[in-house]
Structure formats: C-alpha cells, structure tokens
Image (tube, rainbow, N blue to C red):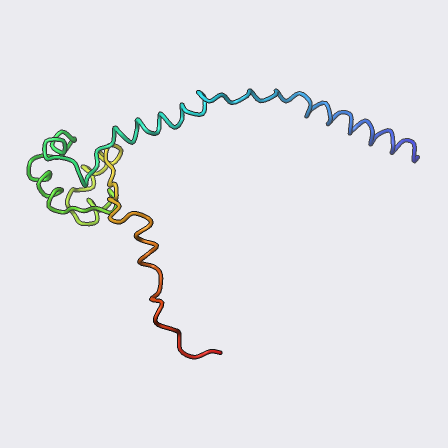
Length: 132
C-alpha cells in the first residue's frame, strides 16, 4: 500500500513538473523596449491640452467649447483637476465627456523642493513646553 501511494505521488510530481517546464523563457528587455512605453506616455501627455495654460484659441478648438466657454475656462483658473470644469459648472456634462480625454490640469510647482523643506523646519529658538 505504501509503495502504491509513493508511486502515485511521484507520478503526480512528474506530471506537474513538466507542466511548469513548458513555460517560455522571458525575452531579455532591451533599453529600446524600456523607452517605448515611456515615450508613448510622454507623447500622450504632450497631446493633452493643459487647462491652466492653454490659450483661448487652443480651447476653442475643443469640441463644444466656443468663445464664451473658453473665456469662462480662462476666468476660472487655476484648476486642480479637469473635473473642476464640472464641479464649478463651467461646462455641461455632455461637453465634459467629449473633451475629458483631451485635457489635463497640470499643477504649477510654486516652490522648489529645497524651499519647501526649509519652510517645514520648526524655529530653533522655540522649545516645546512640558515633558522631561
């Protein structure tokens, strides 16, 4: 009985081992292959129209955006996200659905990272009260 169980276990291991061995080896990733997705994402980002910096003429080219809506978009700047157009009722939902894949609301970095860290440091002359 023990020999039968051992034989079945060995047969199962052998059968599953060959199933895993059939996987194709992965192709080595080249530098050009790594750059392709990044380049595609970069092109897509460049193709998007920034609501915070776009000119009136660029905005008017969008479907459903005329002179009045382009002026309203410019007047409502800055935008934290493209959905602000809906939240602030600058464009109706049907127009937003037509342009949402073509626009972005980039955030301007007001301060460099070093300046932000300097602002975050507490004053050296003041000490916390209490404690040991």
